Image (cartoon, rainbow, N blue to C red; front, side):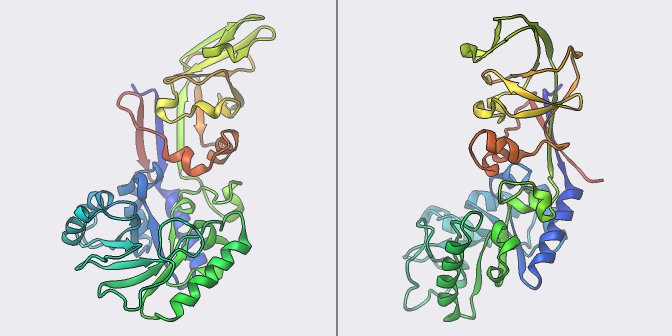
Length: 340
């Protein structure tokens, strides 16, 4: 029996794809499914996204693209990160499209020329005087669309200036945050990941933007015990009982992706929000209970009102990191795709 279960709600995913597609108007939706669709399952997500009208899939590496090609022989697949020379032949054979940030430009494969408009990461400062023969797209990345609208609009103006000189190239810069709230950035296509999974690009409640969380993560109480005054739980005695205190032990830990810095966040135990206490171990964590509960009571780590965004705030990180670090370990975590 698995210690926990991840559920991917394909109906919620479908609703989010439709919601984002509606916002995009005439712009194409390119579904970002890198990192196994941020932990949601790339094949399941890609199948739903394509069925609902997404016109391309975006991945980080040639290897990820190759893994999808067998399931989606006709889909456009864009590899967004820099590709090693050794990968180009495989990309060409699999009919992948690749992003390029600097010369020399590979031959025989569709190219998306990446401009650095202010992200300060991959990308060229200027386009070459003569575009390579395989160029089909022009792309860039927003650095602050979720936190600094003014700088994002400056990046957009820089990008539009370059794109206007090459109207024959597909132009794409929008991520989830921009696709949702910066309409003028949608252009030919928007590369949308987080919003499809019903997660807020802004760290708030996804319902504020009409999105429905797709991922749920559930476990149970494996043991319940009563701590007396001065007794502690976990490594380092980070939680010491100030009086008689019921705690429950949940068989999920940081090796499963429930991070060590999530102490203090809330989970749902038998329908009640309860704080995580003490040090999170590799394979378990403790939660303070309102009263004695039975072993086997359900615990919801994500879902039913427990938002991944809340965990991100508790860990002082971003929601992307919370969901993409959940690991499916044999006999510890199973993942199921449901469609109701």
